Length: 131
Ligand SMILES: Nc1nc2c([nH]c(=O)n2[C@H]2C[C@H](O)[C@@H](COP(=O)(O)OP(=O)(O)OP(=O)(O)O)O2)c(=O)[nH]1
Image (tube, rainbow, N blue to C red; front, side):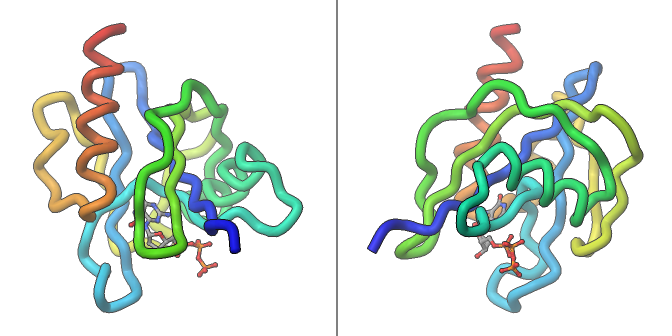
């Protein structure tokens, strides 16, 4: 069976701040910080899934940009793919998360990222330093 793809949006603003979201569930992950996103629905493209998840979870419209790395391993049978994104409209609200934080360049590691997300954050930092 093929792996389930989880798409993740690394939303970056003009000051280089990155949006982090604190998971509410399941208990094993609750309290950890992640990039907004979720599972791709059957027949849905990854970009469409990313836009849909940001609408549902944050109430915002995003534009999908550059891919961040390749396939990031999650639990068995799951893989995460991440993209740099920018906000087109709306102010992010924690509709499904416990909290949201905009992390400035000096704050990228101020939250306890989920295990899968920490290397993504490091790769994002390198991408943003390059720009
Ligand atoms: N969305 C997201 N999920 C992540 C990240 N890191 C990480 O380990 N995960 C895990 C947590 C979940 O087991 C899985 C994604 O599930 P999800 O609960 O966000 O997906 P979903 O919105 O489609 O949820 P649901 O409809 O199944 O309730 O991937 C991340 O940065 N973003």
